[in-house]
Amino acid sequence: ILGPNGSGKSTLVKGLLGLNDHIGGEVALFGTPIERFRDHTRVGYVPQRHTLSSSVRATVTEIVAIGRLPHQGWLGRPDHEDRQIIAESLAIVGLDDRADVDVSTLSGGQHRRVLIARALAAHPDVLIMDEPTAGVDLASQEVLSHVLARLVRRGATMLIVTHELQAVSGVLTRIVQINGGQITFD
Figure (cartoon, rainbow, N blue to C red):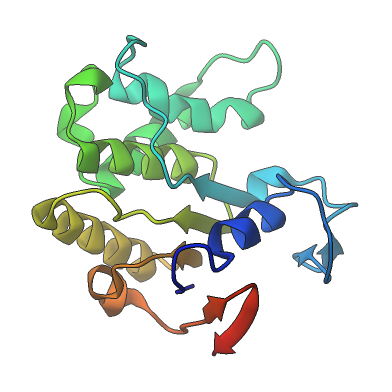
């Protein structure tokens, strides 16, 4: 999804996630109207602004493990399957060698990849990413584009909001442009 700042891209994403008031149109996820949709683990989300605070001490693995929480129940602890899924998610984003590193020591691009791995760990049917390449340097954008290509090869369905079309051009199958909350190109 492309569009200038203020065009409604992030509002659309928040609407799909049920994070803002529904003021118009119809929203259905997997054929279910959003007001009745309950299987939220089917939708993975990578926010526009990374949420990994340097004041919280956690390893990369601990952050990615959060993606498994909905599958563990209230008192669940990671079992063998969870640990395997976490390791696979880290490998997909190319951070398996950083699994035991404190997230506060990572670069901005690495933070984005940790958040993608966290979303992948939930095993979603669709992955929604809001500006995954924004605010990271060119080298990190290139790494992220390789991660996205790896996800496509694995059959991942992704909805990507972006300004940096070049960084995601190799994985696109459809481009929708919005402006003022209206579709201007599809």
